[in-house]
Length: 99
Image (spheres, one colour):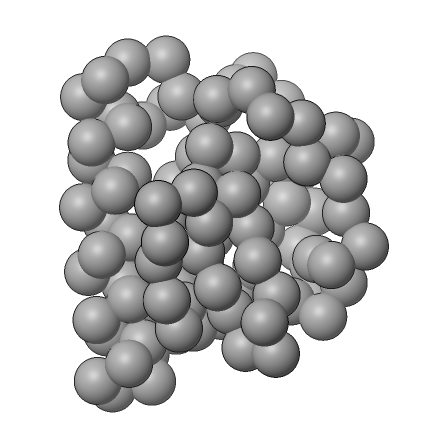
Protein backbone atom coordinates (compact mmCIF):
# COMPACT_ATOMS: atom_id res chain seq x y z
CA UNK A 1 0.00 0.00 0.00
CA UNK A 2 1.32 3.38 -0.87
CA UNK A 3 0.60 6.43 1.21
CA UNK A 4 -0.34 9.73 -0.41
CA UNK A 5 2.38 12.26 -1.00
CA UNK A 6 1.97 13.85 2.40
CA UNK A 7 5.10 14.42 4.43
CA UNK A 8 3.59 14.64 7.88
CA UNK A 9 1.75 11.95 9.80
CA UNK A 10 0.40 13.05 13.16
CA UNK A 11 0.72 10.59 16.04
CA UNK A 12 -2.56 10.57 17.96
CA UNK A 13 -3.78 8.99 21.19
CA UNK A 14 -6.63 6.52 20.65
CA UNK A 15 -8.81 8.49 23.09
CA UNK A 16 -8.71 11.49 20.70
CA UNK A 17 -10.00 9.49 17.70
CA UNK A 18 -13.62 9.91 18.80
CA UNK A 19 -13.27 13.67 18.18
CA UNK A 20 -12.15 13.27 14.55
CA UNK A 21 -14.30 13.69 11.44
CA UNK A 22 -14.10 10.96 8.80
CA UNK A 23 -15.15 11.48 5.17
CA UNK A 24 -16.90 8.47 3.61
CA UNK A 25 -14.60 8.10 0.56
CA UNK A 26 -12.27 5.11 0.23
CA UNK A 27 -8.57 6.02 0.63
CA UNK A 28 -7.13 3.02 -1.24
CA UNK A 29 -7.05 2.82 -5.03
CA UNK A 30 -7.26 -0.86 -5.98
CA UNK A 31 -9.31 -3.91 -5.07
CA UNK A 32 -6.06 -5.71 -4.26
CA UNK A 33 -5.04 -3.06 -1.71
CA UNK A 34 -8.51 -3.18 -0.15
CA UNK A 35 -8.38 -6.99 0.10
CA UNK A 36 -4.90 -6.86 1.63
CA UNK A 37 -6.04 -4.28 4.19
CA UNK A 38 -8.95 -6.54 5.19
CA UNK A 39 -6.57 -9.51 5.64
CA UNK A 40 -4.17 -7.36 7.69
CA UNK A 41 -7.04 -6.14 9.90
CA UNK A 42 -8.24 -9.71 10.53
CA UNK A 43 -4.71 -10.76 11.56
CA UNK A 44 -4.35 -7.69 13.77
CA UNK A 45 -7.71 -8.40 15.44
CA UNK A 46 -6.65 -11.97 16.22
CA UNK A 47 -3.33 -10.71 17.57
CA UNK A 48 -5.10 -8.15 19.73
CA UNK A 49 -7.58 -10.62 21.19
CA UNK A 50 -5.22 -13.54 21.71
CA UNK A 51 -2.02 -11.77 22.75
CA UNK A 52 -3.01 -8.13 23.41
CA UNK A 53 -0.56 -7.28 20.63
CA UNK A 54 -0.32 -3.67 19.53
CA UNK A 55 -0.14 -2.43 15.96
CA UNK A 56 0.35 0.85 14.13
CA UNK A 57 -2.64 2.02 12.13
CA UNK A 58 -2.20 4.81 9.60
CA UNK A 59 -5.51 6.39 8.69
CA UNK A 60 -6.84 9.60 7.21
CA UNK A 61 -9.44 11.89 8.73
CA UNK A 62 -10.77 15.14 7.24
CA UNK A 63 -7.55 16.97 8.18
CA UNK A 64 -4.87 14.52 7.05
CA UNK A 65 -2.89 11.42 7.95
CA UNK A 66 -2.82 10.15 11.51
CA UNK A 67 -1.07 7.23 13.20
CA UNK A 68 -2.14 5.38 16.34
CA UNK A 69 -0.38 2.60 18.24
CA UNK A 70 -3.13 0.41 19.70
CA UNK A 71 -4.88 -2.94 19.90
CA UNK A 72 -7.82 -3.81 17.63
CA UNK A 73 -10.56 -5.51 19.65
CA UNK A 74 -12.95 -6.20 16.77
CA UNK A 75 -13.35 -5.75 13.02
CA UNK A 76 -16.83 -5.30 11.58
CA UNK A 77 -17.87 -4.89 7.96
CA UNK A 78 -17.27 -1.12 8.04
CA UNK A 79 -15.25 -0.27 11.18
CA UNK A 80 -12.52 -1.39 13.50
CA UNK A 81 -13.23 -1.17 17.22
CA UNK A 82 -10.53 -0.17 19.68
CA UNK A 83 -10.63 -0.03 23.48
CA UNK A 84 -13.47 1.95 25.04
CA UNK A 85 -15.61 1.50 21.92
CA UNK A 86 -13.55 3.92 19.79
CA UNK A 87 -14.13 3.19 16.09
CA UNK A 88 -12.30 3.99 12.86
CA UNK A 89 -13.96 3.50 9.46
CA UNK A 90 -12.09 0.82 7.52
CA UNK A 91 -12.38 2.82 4.28
CA UNK A 92 -10.16 5.52 5.88
CA UNK A 93 -7.31 3.16 6.85
CA UNK A 94 -4.21 3.29 4.65
CA UNK A 95 -2.01 0.79 6.44
CA UNK A 96 -1.92 -1.69 9.31
CA UNK A 97 1.52 -2.68 10.59
CA UNK A 98 2.35 -5.19 13.27
CA UNK A 99 4.92 -3.88 15.73
